[in-house]
Length: 278
Image (cartoon, rainbow, N blue to C red; front, side):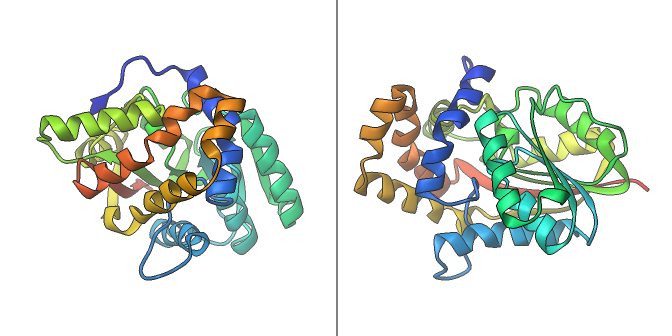
């Protein structure tokens, strides 16, 4: 695991309160990578990632799902609409909670979704109350990842599954250049740390979960940052950031950094599916 000292919870909260509109303009309703198999549009690729995780996790009609780090509600709304799941979304951002709630209402799924503004590391939820605990690109922002997985396992019903997509530090040993790339990504994207594939497996197994599958999608997602980098360069995003919150400039400036980290395998993108014993 590579850590980045100095990141604070309030900084992460402020980042998403301020930049959700940037994400929406740059990318779309999903605040996560696209998953490419060909020449799909970014919108289609982002949707494909959600659909692939639904498939890998075995999400079923009517499941109770906890979406940790739900963003603007894209994946929650998809599962509520397509599979009639009862989805509880959690976000640290009050702005995102309002956005997700409104998006669900306009999509006709408000009766099957509930969005909460809370800290995923502190929220209290009933034990054994969810069929699926789902988190796409949120665990990077958690300070105690091992403790989170212990709590997440307690929220799962026996036989339930956890589905995690995460930015990962590359397999050890990384050289100094690789470690610096990861550290620069952590700083720019406000991540207290990035774990490795081995870290995530250990955290889940130590929480009493059995690994079902692990996927390395690095090469299928890295195009995300080529597109975002080019869109930033061709628009006035930097000027807007200077007006709204200059603290977000480092975020916009690190798009090339994360692309370099993926291309050199200093970083990886992984999907993990694990199950709670029935």
